[in-house]
Image 1 (cartoon, rainbow, N blue to C red):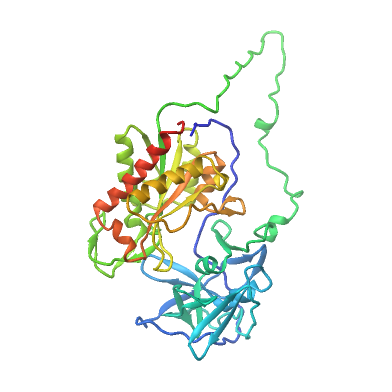
Image 2 (cartoon, rainbow, N blue to C red):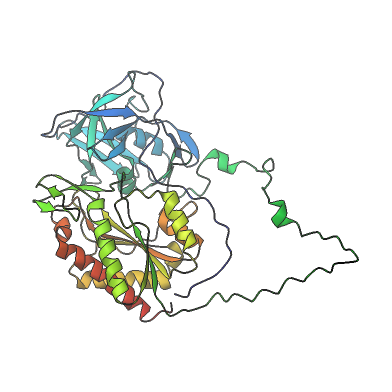
Length: 449
């Protein structure tokens, strides 16, 4: 890719979060679907979530609880019947029933949901106790496993998990404390405020920049003309590959979680016993550091978003991308996935501008080729996901806004006990980094930099 030196104006992009909103009006609680409790019956504290929820631009108020699943992570859970109720009449509507005879939750896509009176009921006593349950959903005859909790007789699932299963998009805006749900056919604004006319909000300008410089002629001085700036060529090639490595998560944000299938030591020499918790931060940084060393040994220049285990906010990442946009040839964001314990393989997420071809698709193909040669299997084809303001994924959007080629690599599902084995050793981490290194060099063997 050719380096571009251009002036640009950046839009502020939303950041992701796992917090949502629930109504706080006291109402009677009605049971939803009988839950089958797992072997772990110790309850967890469930806090009433207080973030605003918008569905296709309109505010809605489903019941939601924030549950700390372990000492590092907390997620927001929603009632299945509330989501089915809200999706009625939309292109991703689905019905929900409980089969008393088979003890199964039955959902059918495309069918209208029939309310039973338990929908959109907030807790009458605030925070609750949540119990982990074994409550799979049978969607169109196929079993779907999602992490679930029972609160007062109702079954709650993660909003993002339900979006993946039932076909709606979920994003979060930390800056305004809002959660956004968009159905496939909706093309309007995320919130009502975004559709309001802005005549009352004149654009702010800097007088010193917007007004031409005024000079007062006199008899003794002659203004010195400013030299004509040399044209900046947007296709300058310096002959050095420069890679910006974005280390996913870190510090207070451990990322996705899973369970260790056997004892092992992390790169920080922390022992994790079989059955103990493992997180993205156990793998993202060591892979990034190894990739850095490999690239530098091959003569490339590397810029890191972090070189230690620390918190790097989305705002920080945005600034790092902006400040290095004129020198970096590409950005690789390193992650490891988690979903429902069954998904496995690698995923590559690419910028939507390349969904019909071009550098982004070709870079993704280079990564796929190396991962496959490394013995990994592909979970899904390269993902090009569009959001309301460009790319759905913030890192890809930030890079696209400054014309920087970028992809996100999800090498393995760490909540799958078999899939995660490929990185539970120094050799596995090095193998992943080597595959990335080879993919980058393979791409730039046929592309300018």
